[in-house]
Image 1 (spheres, rainbow, N blue to C red):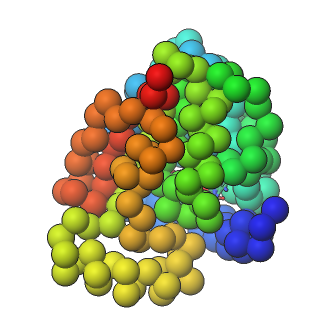
Image 2: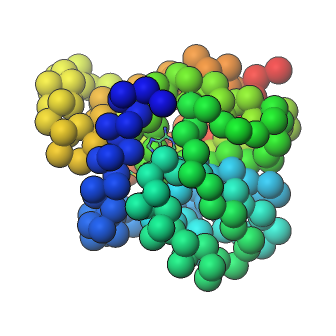
Length: 202
Ligand SMILES: C[S@@+](CC[C@H](N)C(=O)[O-])C[C@H]1O[C@@H](n2cnc3c(N)ncnc32)[C@H](O)[C@@H]1O
């Protein structure tokens, strides 16, 4: 595990007791829209404290991973109450321990802002997603507005230090660069929060 990844894990271990308080700013309707798209064998990446687990449609079988044991400990209770089977594992998205083409859906909400090497993580997501499967991401991204984009670049070190998030990631471009074909890119809350649906490019 890289030094950067160990730093992210330590940060989320520290934030875990407060995460659900901070998370109140994320409306459940955003999560419902993303999680409602899940089908079949699902990999949830960066499950955190398990805020999505109650929202999975019937028929899903969820494997949910996270880097942080403290976040996973909080997800455990929500996993037990979830309407679908959930299997929690400590794992790094940059090194997934699953064979190629294992999952019908790979889902992540507000995760690729904190993964140290998102290109590597997204390549792993593509690898484990079945050819006919879907990748569903809900992510905040860098502004396309020239001035706001530069401000986000300048503020990024502070945001990363305080809450462990990069606020200036170009995640839509990163998804395409990882060999995923974009099916839908939707502004969820203005242009800064996007629902991204993609499939492995053939
Ligand atoms: C902002 S939280 C989001 C949690 C949850 N998805 C949600 O929507 O509430 C980011 C989560 O991603 C996890 N994470 C960051 N880097 C990761 C990695 N390389 N592999 C797996 N999980 C990671 C963190 O531990 C943290 O739980």
